Length: 362
Image 1: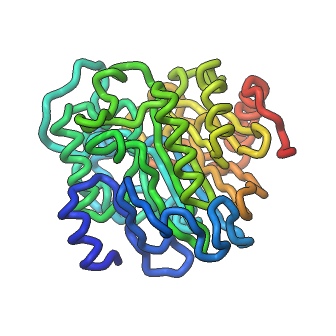
Image 2: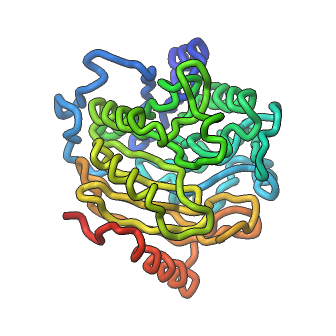
């Protein structure tokens, strides 16, 4: 559990990012860093004496797609401990697990001028923690569905729950700051950014306004990745991008993925299209363009889903595995086998042909 001192620091500073410790040794150690941290702690890895060279241990990472608690999935919070169903055992098995929280966490605010608006109660964070999720991205096109009040409530709820969030914040520095955690001596940095155009100008974080970390500010995005590279051994960028229903990345996505790789990202993972995209390599950088829906309120677009599992040694992804699932009638993801698994794997294989990525790491 996170210490009383850390809780007090979080409450006093009222920031939207926090890191919660866990009760087992194979989960991330409790660590909180202010967005503008400087000094010796900001660069050196405790095992290597310098940033960017991770200790020679293997980490198991897990990623999944879009999650919220509204409509049919709101009922799952009647018992937050079981909200994710049996897939929770897969999420808990990793050293670090990250998903996209596709909702404001609020019961207040003014609805934004858009067709789909999502909000969830504070027990969403209870369910996420119970499922083994270590941190969530807020860099998406629903975090401000209920305006600045809804965003403020979301950040407050995360701080109250001592639950790590990234990709949004009370100003641009906080929004572009990574979640930092030390796992088995490896300093891991995870950033979140959105490349969704709808309301981007109104929702972007600035020096004087809370909001989302937007990929459209290319210099700021590049600088955020480079700064994370200086502070961490392993750098992950969780993107929100693409065209809904399209299993192929757009030119805008592939161009930005190359920028992220050039700036020092080791892993790039995406969400938003509500359908599965595919993966591959940009030089030494592993990229998965889209993980689809995960815990979802409706049967919009595709119910194909799954969990991406990566094994990392140093900065290198040494093993990739995608566990196919389907979004069930309750909105929970359910792992599949047999013909259902083969059908999803065939769709991913077809999508891989349009990624422009290489099949193997050089």
